[in-house]
Length: 334
Image (cartoon, rainbow, N blue to C red; front, side, top):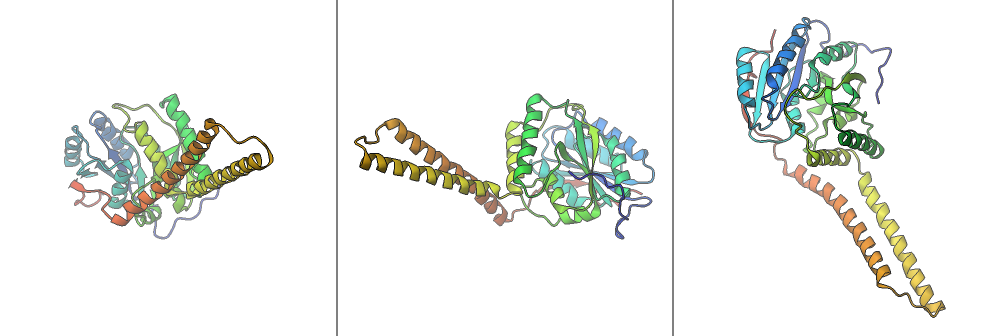
């Protein structure tokens, strides 16, 4: 995990970390009609408290079926800081974040959820550290009392697994809530892969990174958009996008299975040649067949996941389809 450096470096010559920088806040949304009014109000208070910064709020509607799009259009009509991008269908939270990154004009870009589990008030502390010279300031959850016991346990298991397998260390108890400098954003925009794991991609980029602890509150309204099925898919993308060790594991399993098979053959031959006892038993035979079959299917499954990702990449389809954009033709707020 990156730790704060007591001697922050000087700002890059191309950074605008002095007076009046533009901060882009990206908020992916999916059926958030119950929380958007409060989110907009707290974003407004946060921006007003930082009079030396300009803000734009980029809401990416990821195929909502409620009144989310209508509420956001009304907000954009009354506030020139609000920009709205509406997808033609649901493409996923990581793709929505990517779309926001590609449209953001800010000198720094903040990623946060619209459900207020990422408190807007923490953004001021992130901006202060960015001005001190850090390129990435990521939020670390000091407690996860808002999450269920099962979610906390699976999160710990996920981070332990991915940090053991991945070549790039990813800080534990973090989400996508973070601030990134323009340099980091420019690098991310050059990474076109489809199966995206944003927090891993940001760790891979490097630069000066530091953590900022915050208390993760309960959802203001609504329900989680990440059921168990999506969490498993997300974890799989994170592991396979940053490691080839599962492939190496399949090789190791194949070697173990081959060794056990050779040992079984040697045992059978020994019993046949040097004793009067022939290897008997349906149970032993079925155990061997099932073991070998299980190892083969596991290895084929791992290989299939990687091949499937290659197939998705070579088609070169666009990551998302935009049905509507509101507010992006206006000049950044002054």
